Length: 179
Image (cartoon, rainbow, N blue to C red; front, side):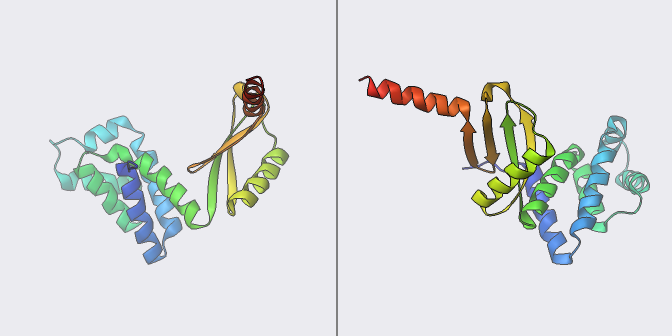
């Protein structure tokens, strides 16, 4: 069974609330704001300190965040009270991914031997989109072991169009023919 991270659970709950209240972008902006705030280690240590009363920490959090979505502020307070404020970055990233999926956009991790220019990314995005039946956004990485072609990971789907894979298939074919 697939393991669901706590950040994913919070992000799923946040997406459900944001859809219900039609606050998709408001939540996204608020979660990113909270994630930026959590980068300050000293502040997080202060907010998670058991010596400081909850109301003081909540006021400090509100002051530092400014105007954000009320329910996302409640989420930050909940995480703070449980000592899990550091999860916000993961929650924000997961929320972005879920929001893209909600809008019919899928992310593909693509590895190529050489960097892709914008035109190549667009062409590959269209081709992968036709295969998957969704709009695909490419997150490109360079991996010299690919030799040529590409390897794309889209969710749980792996598409291996690399020269390395073709050479391996040819090798297997030659070995089987030699038997």
